[in-house]
Every structure is written in C-alpha cells, then in structure tokens.
Image: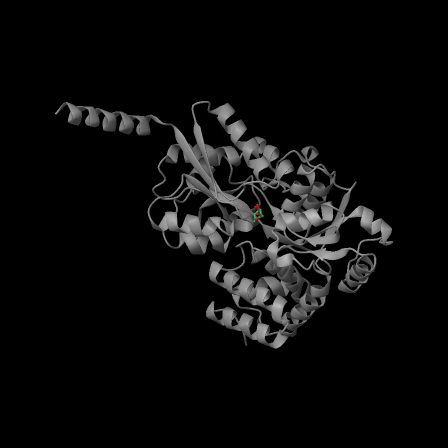
Length: 415
Ligand code: GAL
C-alpha cells in the first residue's frame, strides 16, 4: 500500500511538473555548418524576452531537411507534433500539412500583431491556402547563386564574372588546367544536384516559362529541358570526383580551402563562409547562376502552428517573435539570408546580402523545386532520383523520360 502511495505521488509530481514546465519545442534541421548560429541567436533573444520559457531546440541534421522532413512527417502523422517547425513556403507547407488538415491558420494573429502589411504579398501568398495564412517567413534565401574563390579567380585571370554558360565553361576549363576543381558539388544528399539542375532549368526556360511549369501553362516536354540536361552533362567533368560522398557544407568548404573555383549553392553558403571567417567580397565573390541574372530563385524558411501543438501559447510567442524586425535582423545577417519583412534595417546586412535584397525587390521570383516551393515532395523526390541517376548514366534521353513521367504523375503539362 505504502509503495502504491509513493508511486502515485511520483506520478502526480511528474504530471504536475510536466504541466508546469513552460516549454516550447522548435523543430528544424539547422544543426551546424553555418545553419545553427542564426537559430541559436534567435533563441537567445527569445529567452531574454521570456526568461521563463524553456526552449527545446529539436533538430535533425541533414541539409535541406533531407532527414528532418521524414522525422517530422512521422511525428505529425502520429499526432506528436512539435510546437512549431521549419517548413518551406509553398507546396512543402500546403501540400504536405495544410491540405491534410494538420495546421492552424494564423491570419488572425498576423492581423492582431500588425504583420499583414509588413511582408511582401508574394511571400504571404505562398504561405497561404484558400485565403488563410499558415506560416510566417523568417527569411528569404536565394537559390541561383555561384560563389567563388577570389584567389583562384585571380590566378586563372577571371577578371569579370561570367554571365553566360559559355563564359562559365571557359573558366571551368581554366581552373581545371590550373589543377583545381572547377565546380564543387556534394550530393550525398541528392537535393544539391537538383538545385544545380533547377538553376539550369531556370536559365533555359527563362523565369516566365519556368514559373508556368507549375500551373500547367508550360509543358515540360520542351527543348529547354533537353538543353538543361545537356548543360548538366557538360558540367560533370568539372565536379570533384568524390561529390557523391560529400555534403553541401563539404562542397562549399572546397571553395574555402582553395580547392575549387565555383560552388552553385543557396546563400546559406554565404552564412557558412562567414562562420568560417571569410568576409564577402574579400575572399569570396558571387554572381547569379549563368543566364539567370534576371530572376531570383526564392526559398523561404517559415514556421507555423501545428494542430495539437502541446504548447500553442508559446508557439504563438515564437511566431510573433520571429516575425518582428528585431528577430529578422538578428537571424538573417548570420544565416546568409535576407529578411522577409519589408521594413528591416538594411544597414545591418553585408555587401552580399544587400545585393540579394536589391535583386529580390527587382527581379522575377522563381520557386525552388529542391527546397519545396514549386512542387510537392513526390515530384522533388523523383527529380532528385532522376538527376542523381543522370550523373552516373549521363543518358539524356532516359533522364528526360524519367522527368516527364514524374511530371505526368504530378499532373503537370507534358504535351
Ligand atoms: C534549405 C533551407 C535553408 C538551409 C538549406 C541547407 O532547404 O531553406 O535554410 O537550411 O536548406 O540546409
């Protein structure tokens, strides 16, 4: 009997303890290599504002959520959601979680906090479904950027940045002749090769037609797709040979270590270079992926409120916080992204980020496939497989067919 009473007391204490805990579980894939620092700075400021809050920083390593997304899905389907989680604006949010009824709309809170007119409409549009907004963007990343090692560029006589593929290949060849890797790649997680390919697609379709692929007004079955595969094929000899065993950070690091001239990567690489001690414009330069200079491949990390979140009030504190100017200006200069808010303090951003900000407000926006905005996960996954297979087979006809199959499955236009 005594034993039973003691056990009951333990259970009671534990339960009370659990309820008393003022927790907030934030789920993301920002674990290091430049990813983590911005998140930790956010958490630091949040807990300074709410000292009683116990933040659980739940992360699953792997760039672009290559592992995190599967863990999250299992948790969401199993009725065990975190309080808030990183999710890309666009199809990744809507197709996976909103349409399936797993998210709470947050429009009324955004109105209450005075946020509705503080973000570009284009961005809220991709966080919305049937008139309700479901997540709040903490940043905007650019996906069509080439970063380069300035010392190598100087050595091989690259006096101006290449705008066309022809010029790009010219410098790849020069870098190769000088004993360097031309273009670094780390496709241990397949999305990095897909990201290179989607940039090439953007260059070949052009922003206008590329964006029409997603609403069926533009057919995938086009010479632009074939030409994209040809360019990808022509790039293969310039990749580092060990690309399939490296991560995106490893590939960016090859540029940092003066082993590779170029790296096509989203601008989280900028955050990574800075974390390793580089200053933008000094040791590294950048330019838009060839023939995409009039477009901005947009990637936006957002957070929302899952239905059944254990601590919804704390989740709302988090959402309100990350949507504030203060939080956006803490996070983005470290992360290598630009603020999603329109009224952030531009002076806090370095020369690279100011370049990106300027382009963001002036250029055509194109959604990324590799980072969940343009297409549902099933299509992105099929493209990952097709492109990674292609790096081994180099077979344009078969890969074209694989992509068309995937597009047809998704209901896109392949006529
Ligand atoms: C993207 C994400 C970025 C960065 C990158 C590499 O999907 O939007 O914030 O985390 O993956 O991991």
